[in-house]
Length: 416
Ligand SMILES: *Cc1c(COP(=O)(O)O)cnc(C)c1O
Image (cartoon, rainbow, N blue to C red; front, top):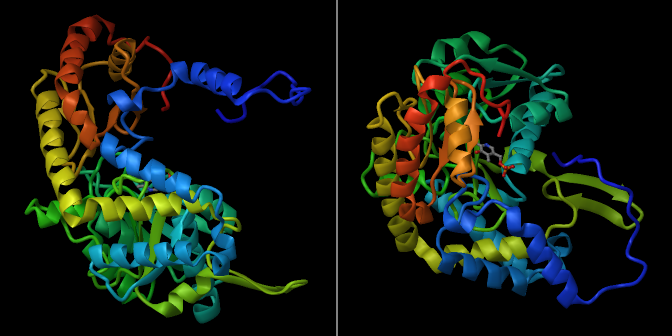
């Protein structure tokens, strides 16, 4: 998608006015997904117009600053320290240490790399393996590829959770990291983290929890009294985890937090080399680090506070229950598994879900299609409260519309 063929084009011969440029940019976005109207489900994670405004103002305030030169910007260093500390406290590990990264992918990269390098040095592992369930995010494959680590995927049970026996069977002397999701993006289901972490710990293997989506929603659901399985750093055997502020932290793209239970493992995250300027050390993967996203995330956390996140999470839980109930009430459709938060998928044993997805797109919804099992993926954020009824009405209309089309001849837009 990002490697589109474009006609050769040089820079404009001379510059143009901002008035002209901004008008053209406004026209260019006219066909973009309408996330502000609740038409998208994933990709953009707004909390409310008010929160988005705070994030925008804070972003603009620090939009030119660069955290690579941290000594020059004590403000940003303080924001990073406090974001890490607030997240550690939320995830029941006030002593944990960590970093703010550019997103879930960088956090995962660092988790796999620290585990690989520690196992190489301390256990002599030279052919490292990473063990994850089938439902773990695809970025694990990409990162394993980058880092020369073999990825081993184990099967899942009927509820879309990691099968413990399969995990146990797949552990070898070369396993450097086992990871699980809280929850997985595809089905919104939390893996049996306590049991998996115990298996890892019994063999002296590091264990990482991918809480990209759950990290800033599950703690609040639990505080509100909803059933949430153990998933955070309070679980024995969990050695690292990460949570994304640009998902249910309701911040702007570009912030995730990685946390380590102890400093010895975290030491492997930094990279140091002697160079012309002296010792060059970078704590994480990026060089230049944009100050805007960091400042926006700090500001959103301050703006919401615990009570703000609790309030948003409670209304989002209600919206999610309404949406899932409404889908299950439509004959032929069902939500897959038992989703634990506002991320889930639904499908059908009888209806052509690709045709349903096509129909929903004719109604202006931006739909993410899923294959295992065939269905439609949904990520709900607080503003979706306003669209539950219209979405369900369109979905009810979609069913009779596609009933005759179960031959699967609809569209080839299988991926999202
Ligand atoms: C989104 C997501 C990621 C990747 O995060 P990015 O910020 O997109 O790099 C990893 N794991 C899960 C479960 C996710 O939902």
